[in-house]
Length: 358
Image (cartoon, rainbow, N blue to C red; front, top):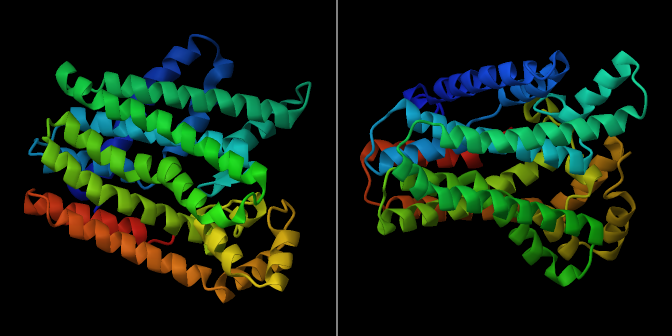
């Protein structure tokens, strides 16, 4: 089997749906002014990358519900890519990240544009402001593409509750993440619980569970299938984000597209970090306190924090949580009454999401 993300030429078809949609939006903004071109251009560059996992899960849940392949569902699934782009752009603003997918983050690109044109005012503030606008555009476009996908009105209405819930819950999860960084180690005893809650609502639901539910609802799935997909999707979504947390600390920049150890510089209160701080000795905690969340943390500082994470057993414990989540997910998948091909692709998507290097 080819990559599960490419079965039925899905990656290519999602990409073409995105390109077609953006072409029309570029014409709309060109009528405003030629100066608006970067609003679409930078969004298009960001959207040209990515794994298309959310779109693939939506599509294969649709197929698992017995619905046939058709262009309209690919367009509806592509709407999730715009929502993802909005989340990434805003996340990079909030985290002051320099890179995304191997290229400068959108707010950094706008700051560079400001400097190149020698415009008045602060270039970084201009970059942040423009990136917020592009993120807002992508959020609006996700709804526009969903609504205009070509699926029947009754199908879109069935999926609307999940589509709306997904967007609101992500914002809540993102806010919880901001609080964790701002509170800087409040109530250490509850840190692991809070970190797991953040990953559930900031990532697990909108990355895996809700795309599955959306695809199945669009196809008119009954309550048994929806419950089964939720049981499959939620532990998988948490395992997916735990893998992302490991990559944020130990990942290879050439593969992840982000500087090595960026989560340590940003002070991300992930499950990985919560486990490390829970089991660290006093000396290790002192080292962590001195370096964690330092934007100027160098390679040697990253290496020291990595050593503590490994020595406390936090890395091994997180890997075990990923393995356990994948096992729970696949067990649930094999209890769902769906066709063998959809089951096989969904199982491959699950393994792909948790056993990855980028």
